[in-house]
Length: 100
Picture 1 (spheres, rainbow, N blue to C red):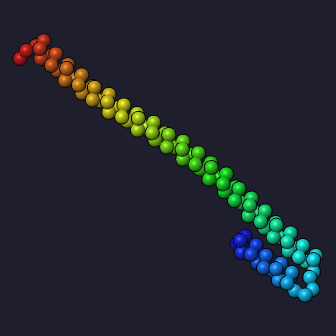
Picture 2 (tube, helix red, strand yellow; picture 1 turned 45 degrees about the horizontal axis):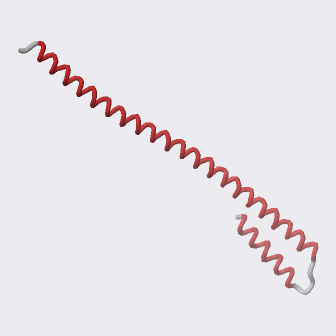
Picture 3 (cartoon, one colour; picture 1 turned 60 degrees about the vertical axis):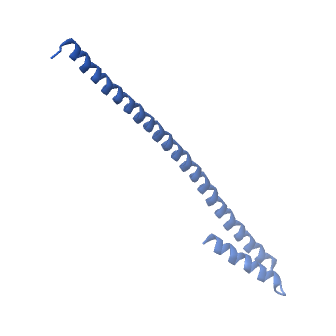
């Protein structure tokens, strides 16, 4: 919408300048409108860029959390394997102490 309005204003200003009788006040008013529309569009773009940066930071935090969780999961798997090994040693020791 903003882009369409800017384009229309620009075309209107060009048409005014091309006419035999140039109304400078009217052209200045249209020019001011175009500048206002551009400023509003620019503000929206800046706001969107800030939001995109915030979203990227949030995504990075989530990714770091996921990496930590995956690291914890790997450590848990190693610990479970060690516990399994220890259980086998305990069974072996029990068998050697009390032969059946």
